[in-house]
Image (tube, rainbow, N blue to C red; front, side, top):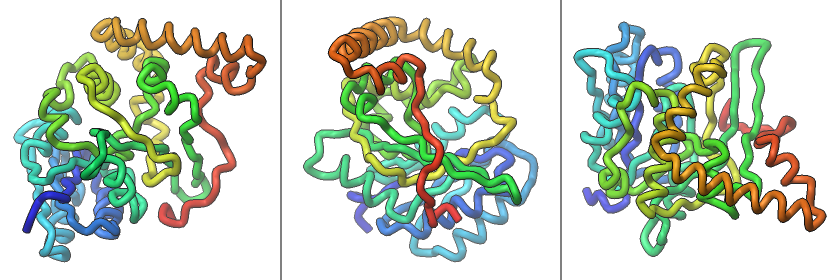
Length: 286
C-alpha cells in the first residue's frame, strides 16, 4: 500500500493503561483511514498497556500497530523519538495516550499540510477535559485571532500548541532533529521543538475549531508553577534571540492597538489570558 497519505500516530506511554484504550479507539474512528500506530512504552510498570495495544492490533489487522518497549526509562522525548524512528508514514501525528482525537482530526489537519499546501505543521485549539465521576468538565482552549495573525511572534508569549493537536510532515522533524532529550527541558520539550521549527523556517497552519481533547490531571507536572518557571527560564536562555524579538514585537503590537482605542483583547493579552469557560459540548469526548 502507498504511504503517500499515511499518518503515523506517535504515542509515548508510561503508566497509561487506564487511558490508552480510549486514545487508540479515537484513532480507529478517524475518517482518514490511512494510519498506522507506534506506541513506545517507556519502561513503565505493567498496567495493562501491552495487553490493550496487542488486542487493538489484533482487532485492526489492516493497519500497522507496533509496540516498542524501552529497556529502561528515558523520558517522553526519547519515547517520541523512538516512535518517530520506527514511523513509515509521510506525516506524523502526536497523541498522548491520555488524550483523544475527534473522528475528523486527521482529515482536517491534513487539508492544511497536504499536497499543494505550503505549510509544514498543522495544529489548532483543544478541549481541555476531566471525566472523573462528579468532577467532569469541558473547556475550550480557543485560539484568538491575535495568536494566529501574529504567529510566530505570539509563540514567544506562551506555548499555545498542544502536541495531541499537532500533525506535521515527517521530513521537517527529521530535519530539525526531533524532540530534545535535555533533562533540563523535559515537560516543555514540545515548546522547544515548536521554536526550533519556527527558527528553521517551517510554516504553521491553524484550525480554528478543536479536533482533539487534552486531559487535565490535577497532579500534572505543569501544575508545579515554580518548576515550570525554572524550565521556561532555561528555554529562554537557549533561544534568547527568538524570545526577545517575539516579546518585543508583541508588546509593540499590543500598545499600538491600545493607543488606537482597541483595548479589550490587547489588555487581556497583556495578562496572558487565552482560555474561556462555557465552551460548547463536544459529543466525541463523551
